[in-house]
Image 1: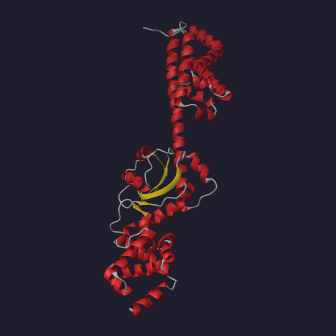
Image 2 (image 1 turned 120 degrees about the vertical axis):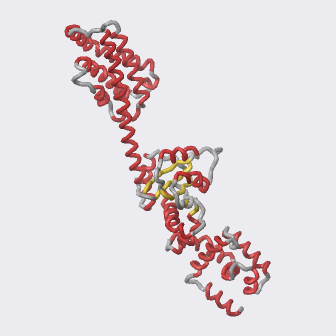
Image 3 (image 1 turned 45 degrees about the vertical axis):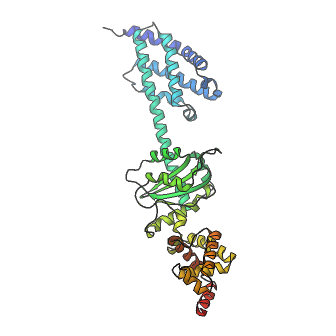
Length: 400
């Protein structure tokens, strides 16, 4: 049965430890420089801070050995000597390496002095290791909470369009690696939302994301994070399709691509407007692009949708040929009937086909499809308000 040291023996050991504490700190720093490359490459200021931590650890052990019951958690105070920037620049792995080297040097010096001293050293090193893990865990938790608040602030700024001069620095603080075009995806928040799973999926797709939860609404800002020229570049529509399982049931709307993250509010406005009216399209796909909901958005009073319809459809057609506008009007008003349109315009049905093909070539929408016909008719209505096009068309109908 092992018995502890007598009070006199312990007092002698404590006196000896206090005498050699400076030598132990010096020997520890020398060993660190010899065995740990990352320590040798540190700037002098940080190496000095590491030395303070090592010295604090040795001093704290002596106090703990003197009265382990009175100060059972003194190990946690070691890291109070470390400047805040040191905790940010030295990883947990490196801290554990520091502890191991310190214990090795101390153990070599106390070997043969007293068995209980060696056992105390091993027990104390365990406490220090747990204390280090606790310090880094709390720092990581605080950083995670701060990042979450900052991310929520950035997403909110994007949604409201109230970007300020600090937005780029906030984005950089979040570690955003996205480059080039950005798009905003809006859907519902699932009951059991796993934000980490959504981020892992985003990393697999080679994209960067900002995630904002606003009650039942989930907003994801998407940017491509892989800048390699040979990397696969997925269209945003395909990215949205692959992210779709991370959203709750209901509609999922993708805003149009914009040049950069600072312009993401434009995509966000379109996505939010589309999300608000998506239920008006009975067979809307999931996900659906906000621009495919232009008629519903325009009817709901969205000025961006109205301007988009006029700029992308009505004005290009009018600038190209008034015949195309008149043919499209007649074709849509006559239930997309070629023969009825030809009779109204006094032309051959093949002429109507040719003009409709020209319409598709000019604006990219095909009037022969029911959904695109609705988009085109809404654009004609909006574009003709306040012009004389409707009057000319009415006069043509009277002559017919």
